[in-house]
Length: 139
Image 1: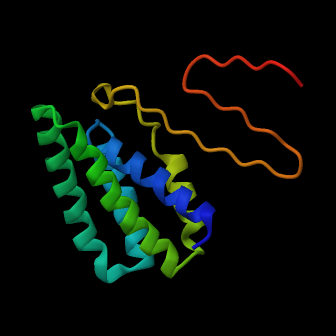
Image 2: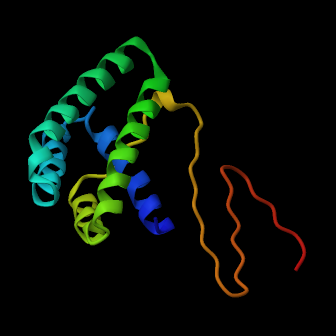
């Protein structure tokens, strides 16, 4: 699978799971279910049920202070989205459109100081990334 599709699936999973615990959960559920309806109509109803189950589990985990549950749920959705994209890479455009429609996910306060970064360089480019202070000296 193309690395861009893997990154897209990961980003989408993080967004979907994060939004299921917000006021935008209904919009998220409708958008993801509609994507499945177009790609795999026979699975759309089951996916809607999975989204509702994920929301219930996520809310319970947050209430209990279980920070690891959100990551586990995100991993599950990442796998689902990767399989969907692997079966039909043309869905990339639709998934990107879905992400553009959804509101951004505010970082959860129970995730600690977790930072995720991605960079891509080509030719002679350099990438500098930091989750905090960065001091670069020299050429």
